[in-house]
Length: 109
Image (tube, rainbow, N blue to C red):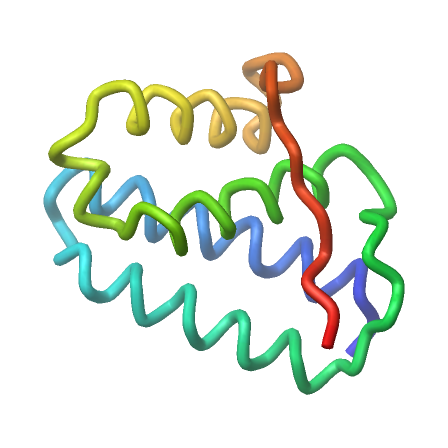
């Protein structure tokens, strides 16, 4: 699977998972597991370049790292965090601008 297709697919899935957790139609542990599974899939691609290829990928990695750091439960407990993630989702959906202070780098082995 090429990197760009992987990222595009995962952006769609991430948006769906995060939205469902925020709407409380999906338990946050499902999102946490999705994050772990995505990172494992990424590792199997053996990517050695840490620089994202475009703004969408940079925001994607920012979201992945933030969710890994804070955990999906923070979407219910931390309004600032929820707002930050929603800003990223808006960007993915084409209804917002590039998020301020968004720092996303590819994880490498």
